[in-house]
Length: 385
Image (cartoon, rainbow, N blue to C red; front, side):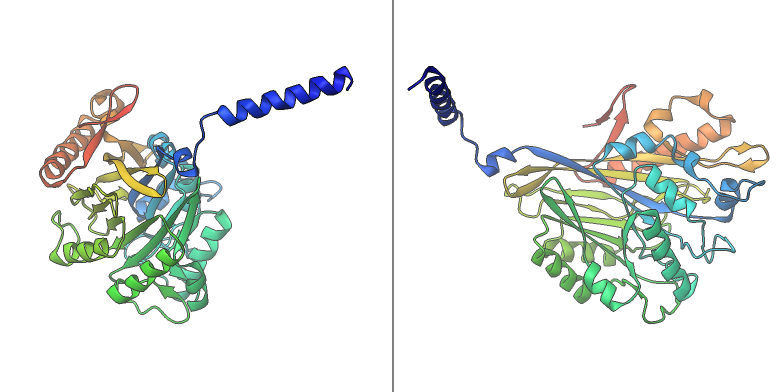
């Protein structure tokens, strides 16, 4: 044997010894302690004043990016962000209440701000009829932002329910339904998912058949402007939690309602119920409707088990100053701005935000179970445990 062959064989033998004595890791051990976060965002509205605010008067083009500039870092920090998109993209004439149709630029700004998924089943989904539903779906698809809740036809629904999200070996099923379309009949073949226990039960089973590790149910429900969940909401939440839904997220009341974290030591069906996130952006300025919350839920994966390791909320408020004779809209993370009176154009605006913060904290401190607020400490966001 020549020296070159001897050296090569010695090197291979040494490599084998090192490999055999390295600590072995099973697949489940490799995934132990992996974490990922989901952020849930409330009602994205499109009132007339918001449309006028976003329009360039010379080019007649629209841009909503400024609306999200202060909240974008918080949204982008989450692994997955989901929001309730409570307008249609039906084309001109662009109008707000009662028959919403916003420029598609609003959805583009949502994507630019870090929102990954939109849910579209709500009481305004059919405001512009069949054409509006189809146009909304097509425009969201063209922008490249995934969505669920409304469908072109039953074949599309069958193939797209549930919306499956795959991230780092974890599969997440997102489902979305509404209690109403404000009395507007949804013409065939388009579909708006309606809240129906039997239908949702079948869809949850389908999610389980697709091996979803986490099932999210985003429901448009409840009573407008009521800060206390109705019995109908609590009964439905209890039922859906019992059949294996991990996260139940609510919208529609346009005000905040309580949040509940359900802890299970066995991690079987560890979860969260948020009855109403409130408004994310709108022109509603009455007390309690001028802001809302974002709820961040962090899951930890240990092998094939998932548990909620953290759950908290950010209060948000819509700042609407007048600039160059038109109202502007900015979503502010409240904790970051609650001591910055100098930021606001008028003292009254700052005081209105402070009142929203005070009222919201009082409600949620009294009603929430195991879910606290995220507070900005000057550098980082931390849970106020």
